[in-house]
Amino acid sequence: MALVTYIKHDGSSYEVEVPAGTSVMQAAVDNMIDGIVGECGGSCSCATCHCYVDAAWVDKLPKPEAMEKDMLECVLEPRSNSRLSCQIVVNDSLDGLVVRLPESQF
Image (cartoon, rainbow, N blue to C red; front, side, top):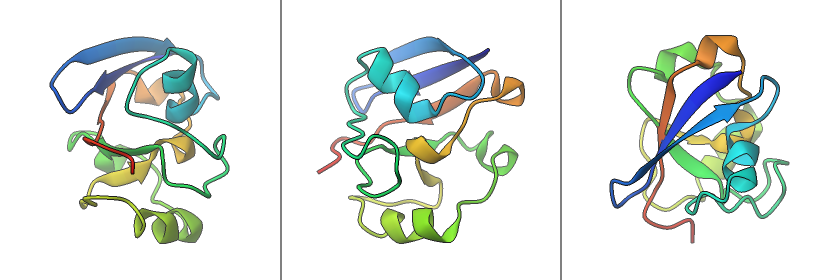
C-alpha cells in the first residue's frame, strides 16, 4: 500500500491509499478523482490519464517505454515530467508519490 497525492489544476488535492500493483490511473478512477479519465481502461492507447509527476519522484519511476512516449506526443501541454498514469504501477517504494493533473485531458 502506498499513499498517492493527486493535485488538481485548481490546487485542490486528494490523498489516496493505493494497493500495490494498482496503477495511478486506476486508483484515481476508483476514487472518482476528476482530471484523470482513462478512456482506454489503462491499455496505453488514449492518453486521457496524462499527469505531471512531481519533480521529487521523476527519477524514482521507471523510464517510459516507447508506446507511452508515442502517446505522450498526443497530450495537451506536455512537459518533461509528463507521464501516463496508467503506466505507473504503485509499489511500496512509491509511498508519498505526488502527481499533478492537467487542466484538461482533451
